[in-house]
Image (cartoon, rainbow, N blue to C red):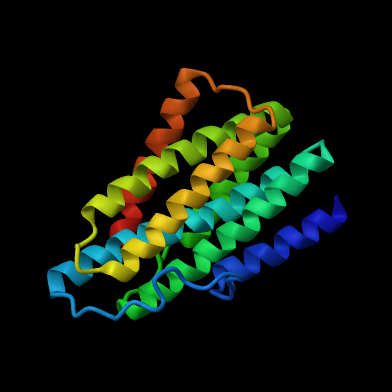
Length: 206
């Protein structure tokens, strides 16, 4: 528990101070940078800010869920998913810099709230915890698909990043389902969607 807490604290510091590092190359890194119009740049920046904030939340969720997971196999699955999510965090952070944009100013708040939610899910038991991952990743996959549709066609770099993120999220959800995740009650799924909608709306601008 102490070791997991230390790892979680280190992850929080790296997440919130912009020191996340990727173990995989940025998708689309070899694509040429396209000159975007100012409206398109702002649109891409807003969407990528939302995606970056989503990865901040993912780091918090996995840190909390891993901290209270009872099964060592489940804990290892969370650790592997968190490592891939850190790639996403670093990719979106780098893309924001390329778009001359900043991350959400409220990321510490998003992190703290997501950590609390992750603890609650974890304390409900491993199968409920895994079910929370299944539903989270399903909703994230949906919103990433929507972002691919909204991103300017000329912003091939952002589109490549979001496409790879979507593939990874689908795999994480499948992993949790295979590990025995239980379906969540409808009111819980609706509450998760409502909270995510608030985050997306605010992070797009702030």
